[in-house]
Amino acid sequence: MGFNGAKKPKRPARGGIVTALDVGSTKVCCVIARMEEPGSLRVIGVGHQIATGIRAGTIIDMEAAETSIGAAVHAAEQMAGETVHDVVVNLSMGQPRSHAFTATVPVSGQEVTEGDIRRAMAHARTLQAGPDQALIHTIPLGFSLDGSRGIRDPKGMSGHSLGAQLHVVTAAAGAIRTLHACIARCHLNIESIVVSPFASGLACLVEDEMEMGAACVDIGGGGTTISIFAEGNLVWTGFVPLGGRHVTNDIAHGLATPLVHAERLKVLYGSARVNPADEREMIEVPQIGEDERSGSGTASHPRSFLVSIIQARMEEIFEEVRSAIEQSGHARLVGRRVVLTGGASQLPNTRDMAAPILDKQVRIARPTRIAGLNEAHGGPAFATVAGLLLHAVRNPTELMVTGHEAVASTGLIGRVGLWLRENL
Image 1: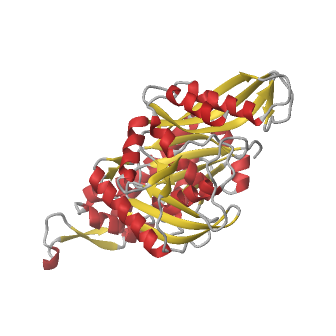
Image 2: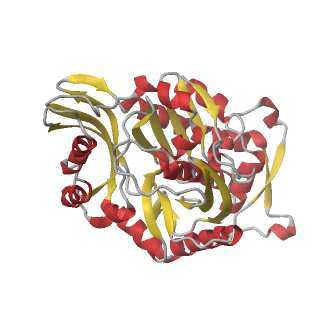
Image 3: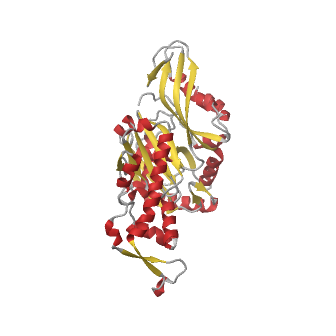
């Protein structure tokens, strides 16, 4: 992947522990893994809880969210027989945004050094992406030297002006501080923050897809994230505020049934596309406010009615995804390949529905590069947490941001001096 001169947090040595924490809208999941070989992890502990105090990726009740996070981490610790202190955590809240920056710095005219490259990348932190925005990722997409573009690794080359084409991801600093405070109340330290679509893409795209260009679409509970990769790098992220929970809410309203039963009906009988046989199959639907034990509190509906409700919302989700990709400015890089993951992607016929709407070749993906994830924890719903583990041990090209740095200042400018003192 070219240049590796960016600041890297300590990578776990053989036998070391990595802990990933996925704070989602419908579930909180903690996975503890042990490093076996360079870049190779084996899962030794898993814990997950229904998310409380979190809605659409945003913490709305600190105490409830703290309880969910603490319970998930404790369960993973019990299974692993380890006590963890540092976590790699995902970021869905704070409306993460992608920005394209070009940073140019003078060089001595001698050979380009790692210090020159770091200075070019650090320059991104002087660029104000908006009020109260904190920087999460700085990823180099390519370099130029004295106007010659398309250079992957300029180290050792000679020139006078070094340019870096950077993909910068920022998010609302207030949301990050809230996440940091919530996790700190669980007596945990954030080692690094990774935006959710980046993690999902790392877990689900194969190397050829990352290199040739593809999009990863993760349909979560509170929303759908999109990541576009090309030439081995993350080049854009996006978010559609619709997900599996919206499908469940539609079922609850359409069939006048409690949310818990709507979720059960979705899992047992749901599909993304109506089948002619659905007209003949009748399902019993518990009604809101009725006494289920008496047997009189249910209504009978054809399965096609349930599926038609699901289909309408799923079509809307994919239409919004298509629109987001088209407006990203990187649709050409996606080519013909879209990879679906996330809990809601497991609905039958989802791929068949998505392909014509997105006008792409579509496959459903599950994390494949983490040993020890069993059938229960290795499905599409666990793509983000698997990607967090992979991010923790990969050889990054990006300028890493620790959890402490992410909350140290509300602006980008405030951290430039700190970074320069630490690295140059």
